[in-house]
Image (cartoon, rainbow, N blue to C red; front, side):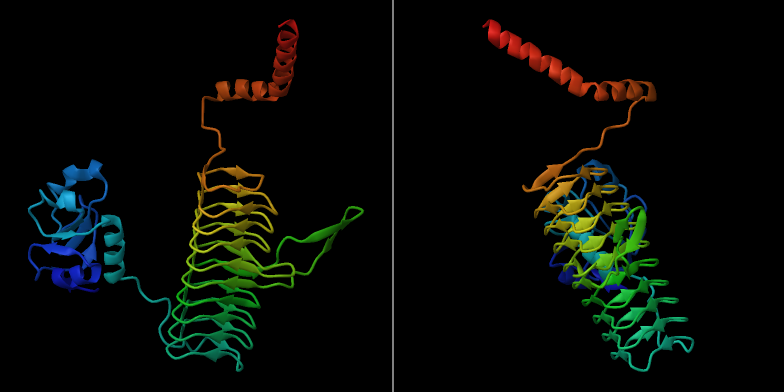
Length: 341
């Protein structure tokens, strides 16, 4: 467990410290659950009442919130960002691996940098290169001709197929599959003819991929995930998709093949994006949005219908099927009115 004084924490955050600089904190906690030795934050004004009763040794606050708080305060522009940086500093998450476990199977031609840690039952294939200080969790299988950048962390039971390259400081969570075959087939009179997927996967720096997510390899060219992308659990990235830098994709979203998503997009949970589409930079899709055409302008897009009473939903479903008929009737009435006028 890490412990720091509030003076050290303020220097780390670039915060204005109000209170006891020698107070030591060792972990973070919510305002209403924090105890002595913990630091909390307040970014939502609706929780202002919790500030009056918190037992935290220090609270990360904005300028206006700090004015009336009598306790130890770390004043920053964005308390939530301050909390995130504090949580990183005090992070107590264990390493994915320590040292090289004797049960690991490492091909003689593989190259491991200084400080690489490999846990039990890991398999590392031929000609694979792993950068320094990378951690490979138990049961992970890494195929041949893979490149993993320094400082990356692969948790237990990750599968990395051949010809997958990732940059530095990536985090790959358990159950992730990188470089499995894309869904590519030709149909010959009802018989499916498999198309070998001969591209690879290219992942940039500082990418995080959540548990159970699958990233398919490209059919001919590579599937690409650019720098700073964050992907939640249970996401499907199909072959030849390109995800622009610093885009975020929430859980259970599905991308069909050859989708290009721009930079700084936010894709909500359970979205479905059809194949061969382009989504421009700065697009925000709310949860369960279905995209069937290119999105050419930044902004917020939604398409899911809200939940309703089942009987009403059934009636509305019938009416939805009648929309075209209703449209045609209205069009005829408009033409008749135009003629009469």
